[in-house]
Length: 84
Image (cartoon, rainbow, N blue to C red; front, side, top):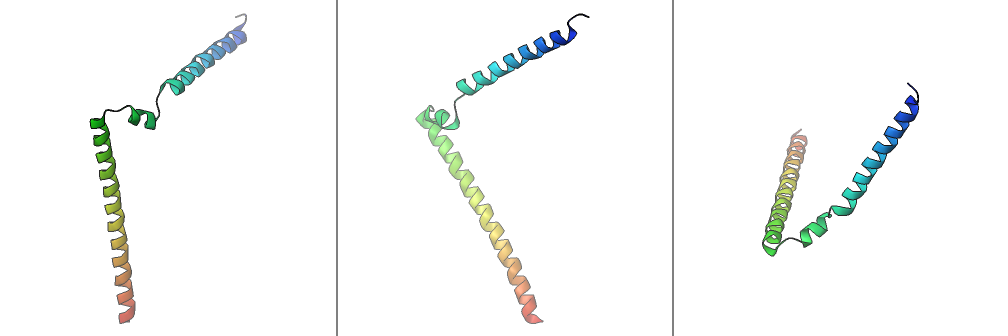
């Protein structure tokens, strides 16, 4: 097996070049989120905006429910301490 290590080194180098080329192509040709949004039609933009607002409202409602449950727990412990 003459040149076994050299063959491995050459194969690894070529594999790294192929993978590196793929990464560079991916990064240069794939649009980011803002570019993708800018290229949408107005109907799709309205749909995306509606989904974003619905998600924000749901997250806000979840935060409010969590705060209310924490406040209720604090009020229960305060009332129990007051009764002692």
